[in-house]
Image (tube, rainbow, N blue to C red; front, side, top):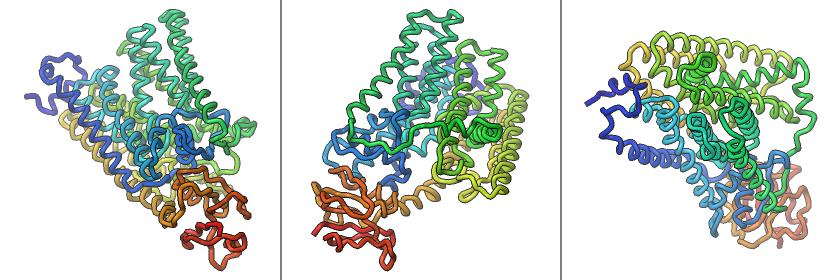
Length: 576
């Protein structure tokens, strides 16, 4: 029987190796079991969350999903230009039936977990087909990729990011297949996945541009025919029309509060300082990817660039890695441009949410180098990754110091990079050099595993353990405090508010509490008012601050207080 070390040493052997032919049936079984365990793990991590904690993104998706399921609508923080309905479509079945909100939210988490955990089999297929890993390494590497906090974290909340990482891996797998065996069916599959990106989120525009460039290059190089071009592009157009149809179906049930992109975005970058800020934001996101993959993303980028210059693994690998590189830079740049144009908010010290979807792919590509390349190759590439980490940390630190010297501060916290917070212990401040140290420590382990092949299995197991442990830290230090701070008590149902009553909420109630109170009212869209409630209001949520000037005087308007929480500064009133 082969040992774990023997299997790892054959990481780059052909997939049809006789030694494992009699056990092929085990792989599908292990993938199914792994997927089920992944779903259960994600649901367990989200057990404390029964109301949204990521405002206003969750509120927007949930309100839209409820409206698509035939229920009342609500607000969305999107704008007309960037509006997407793909994710609300996915989770809308959770709002079918007469459920209370907590039950529906649990169903949303279950849908999320099922989709998010699909990263395991997809990562395994990527390891086998693109990276040519043997079954054992491919399974372990897939488990590491599927448990990355950058991906698993979002399965607990109603955010589109839960879908993006599996979709990235599926798309790049399809691109590899298409280049390897050109044909209309493969082209249509790639186009369908690109259309799904567009249907899901505005960052899909970057994917659409990359896809269009890929199609054009393949056509110019006569690798595909005009008919295949149509097969690759028509699904994108079809799903863009599905998005428009979904918006038309919603009508006025969901009203938009987001601002349209304006000239402010161009003005924010159309200068020397603006371009420097843009470059700093893009560089910080790329540095972040190297940190959270323990240096593996940097190792992968060096290998991908070399593959573009001197192909060694065939045209399919070369084209796929080129597409992945273009997407990584495009998403980091596009996100930075959009965020630079948002007025009224400070710029972010780090905002990794948009590039997180690429972390599992680059982690897998980096692991392939460590598992299959020689020691000297790994040493050179990890040296480059370590240099990126240290230089990046120095530049980020200089940026933070410069901004502080000008009397300003960069926004830091929330959902911008929860895994980085946990890995560096930087709960209140950005610690770039600690992040670099984490990444460099990972690089040292990669070199050791390349030098001593028997350390390769322990390396993968250690990475898996770090991922699971990091998620535990995130749950304890970020998620549970957020739940405690954002859950209104008592529950709306405990106050005697009855289905069918017309409910309004005062803008005097803190917006997070206002949103989470409103979610518990499942039978109507809770609209807002400032001081005087509308004549149609039967129940209202208002500010309760005894002894303070802005304490809402409900008796003056003919209301009777039902209860609430003066510590959280909210109360429910019914018209007398």
